[in-house]
Length: 369
Image 1 (cartoon, rainbow, N blue to C red):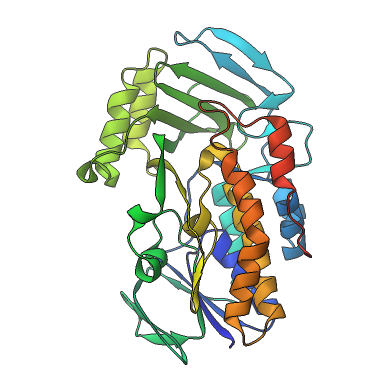
Image 2: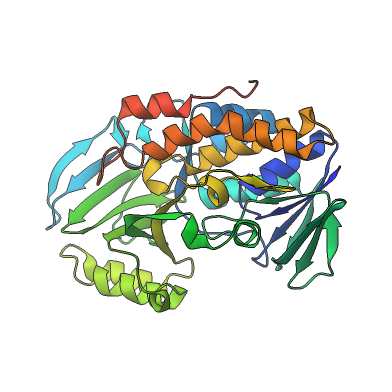
């Protein structure tokens, strides 16, 4: 039982593939995008997830490209500063922490470069059907010829195709958290220098941080909303919604709306969690956001994905030939960790988790358990 198909070429999937290869497995990663994905917000590697990155061999490299903020300003709706901090930021927490904040695209790129020599990658393709029997899982692809694998792992995000094919409709597991988040890049038209700005205007708000040696901005814009109608959830429909809402923001709304209109890396999706009673079914297992998305409100999505990849790889290695035992062990070890971290997203609606809760949640598992 050595061949493993992993759907999703972001962070969790390639890290799992790398760790499985170390244990003698033959991993293949299929990714819908034509190449390594760019764009995205800054993500945090916290607590025990730092140990995973170190074991993978990327801690030093990740540390070199971490964001280095001096602090942040909190603005009122008219743009006036109502608070500031040189000790912490809303995106990364305390600035003196050992935790690391990096751009998602930087982490995705370095993980791919670190793994591509040992992992088969199928870019520009996706899984379309799964058929399990006693010998394995026959997988059909949109482009490649069908193949049979011993195991399949869905690491393909909030809208996981593998989860839908193996477990049923997305709506059975998605819990909307009352808002949407958009992330996009722009030139640094505000002239920010290693300094973040956060503003709330009614039921909307944004955070802006400079990146790439202060030459660019990453803008995270959120707005409260019930689940949008299906026809409004497509990429361009969401972009129009974001642009329309940004145009009503009183401070810098026009320039932010224009940036969202032009951004090639525009992203928008619901703030939601995936909650499931089990993350495996037969020879298929789920990893990261596909199985237990905590939402960006938790600040722990990347860390959960990294830790989950390590625990799943370790569980499979310790139960050779017995995927049912391995999957059971994976779920037993990860469930308390996931529960604590998902709770971070709901403990303080409209604000970040408390420092005490974050410290407890980010360290609530042992990699060698």
